[in-house]
Image (cartoon, rainbow, N blue to C red):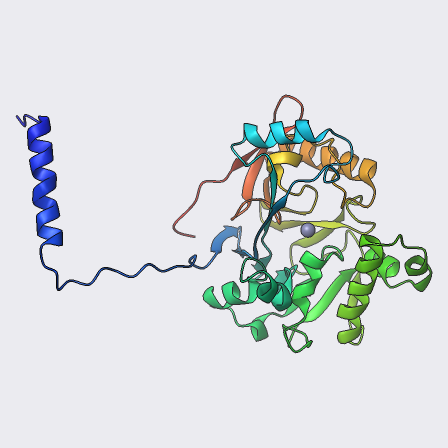
Length: 327
Ligand SMILES: [Zn+2]
């Protein structure tokens, strides 16, 4: 029997330290100094889904972030899930769906401009795409869920050309109609909304407005169905991906960070275009996800963003799916 006294443990440790550290000619392993590629893959029936992180942004929490709850309550909610109570964290993760016939990218992240501005924190999609073994030219279709910068800015490369040169760009018809309407733009409030209109003109004008508008509830690719989930924006779209009996709900921005908005579904972020409508949509979608026990992929979930939803006291709990080393 081993008599594991303090003496033998200390002696053993010293022996190991000796054997590792005694020769001064051995070079220390240099630290990598950067994160490894953010790629995760899983299957939905015969479809293969590749999740690619576009990065993370952390910024000071302000009074105006949540429009209908006191900041003290928001700080408390963050502390309850061991997050810094004075900061907000936004995660970003577009996905590629391989339907067998086509490679479909859903949303494009914040683009190469953000990669420079944030010193690599955001705009990582293209480098992670390449790390996943997919070339931008391999993408057959880019499907956009809604026209906010973290979803459309990555459509353009650093030369202001389509970053996915062989892709058809598919956009929700309702979203297109609103953001490309000159009358709507002239009535936009100063600040964020006006900036969004300008940004969308910048992006889509660079593409010569060459897009395919799509309607809800009509398949975009085999098994990929766009579903209206309006509120966050006027034409905000989620998707159901189906293959045989397997189903995945791709929620887009039904919630932003679920640590706040799944647990507190009635809180409105200042970036929800129609707060009450966004809340109603969120509750309807999450009640359905609970009832169906359906897997959900969240664009703004912590990476890799695959989970199931359970009912919790006032809202919902996100239960991350188990990581799998194989497909
Ligand atoms: Zn978003």
